[in-house]
Length: 51
Image 1: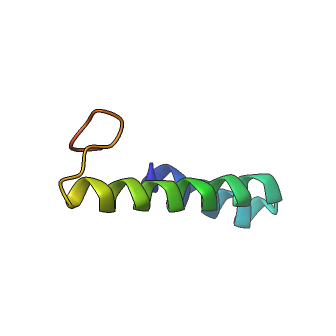
Image 2 (image 1 turned 120 degrees about the vertical axis):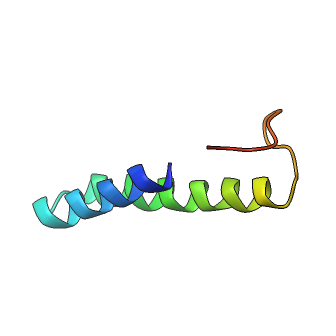
């Protein structure tokens, strides 16, 4: 999720498409939150690890 967000951020920046930039930021933030919660051992959505 984080990698997809970074790819969308780069594509949005290169092609000047604001919606890709916005979606990329959202995916990076959500991916980081899920990674932190998974690393603390807290189950998110019934899963202990989110890959």
